[in-house]
View 1 (tube, one colour):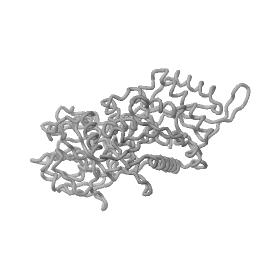
View 2 (cartoon, rainbow, N blue to C red; view 1 turned 180 degrees about the vertical axis):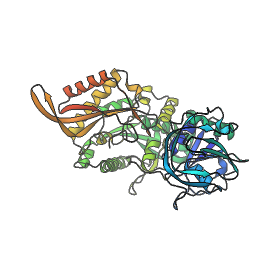
View 3 (cartoon, rainbow, N blue to C red; view 1 turned 60 degrees about the vertical axis):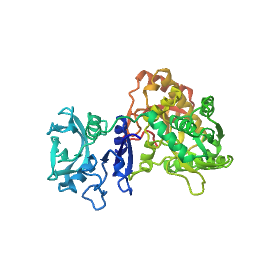
View 4 (tube, rainbow, N blue to C red; view 1 turned 30 degrees about the horizontal axis):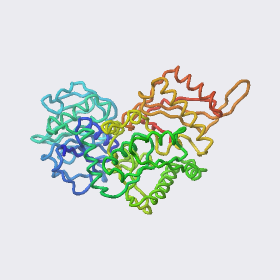
Length: 509
């Protein structure tokens, strides 16, 4: 087994980004909540304390028993983690007069510290906290400051315990990965031997032991996540895997038939189920996005429950859930704040007799793609843009009707085909069209029109947690806008979404 790192989740939305940076160093890590009982700390080569939305000064702030860790295992406290180490070990923390947020420039005070080995003195870092460390514990050394924060980084004497008040895990900390490497590789002496192949082998062996002789039913979507999950399960349990592709009536144009053809020759036993009328019936009259998500999720479960009963000895429902889905929904391992629900996250209702298996739930999208490549999955499948589980239902603002779905399918098809024609598709992380619940005045020929408006969205991202809008060429947008308006009856206006995540989400609902 590879060397492991433990990340104690104290509630930060950045916790998963810490894991991401650690894995990019080819080091295996696990995330557990701070209050998880009976953690075997001795099985880990290092421990990282995450940030938190709480203040160490608050009555209900997370408390951690570090008696088995501090001074015995290399320990790094990030943001709240650093403030925790200061506050509870003879230092002093107080509220900042102003919120310390955004870019800052690092000033290395102790150049002999291995934590900052090969880090330039003016390295850019990212702050995000409302408390600050006024006084360090007596048995520590200051190792870095900024123009606004004196105690930006410190270390305890005679032990491998460090605290930093900034976030090395975020993109804006230009040398953050190098700092984490210094802590994990140079200080903690962890081997960098975790790869996609080793993860695949580990998961396959785990699936074999977990499932044994039971049958598993898996919902395929045609996307990267469910396909990689299917191939992992196929390698683990062979014909015990039964795949179902459900047409929920909210797919892209012709996607039901295209996806079924896609899986021919991959050795997957796939059954197509057209439940589009049922989904659309259940969504009739519903406008609230969370209600729509829950209806789709519940209907999805009903369909699968019915299909599973047609197969003998089915004990498991497999899902291609990935970590951003989890962290935005319920934080499967920690107390992070919920942003939105996902139809395939959170378990199953009591009436359903199936247990859930999610082989990818701790992976990011780019990690899933690398894993798929190691499993020899075709590049055209691995390069497919993410598509939301609720499909076009969360790209149609307001009530869902078959007419609106067909209209948006046509718009989406023109947009996606255009991206491929202009060789833009592979450089974009996700793209799609949104049907807005407003009409606008237009002119076609000599006639006044009062028709629908659609928004186009294209973003660049690596994990879905943050995203920037893509600066598509004006000539392309002009062509696509004209084509949509000319070819799709009912549309007379096209706009382009130039908002980033955060503050906006990638999807509109």
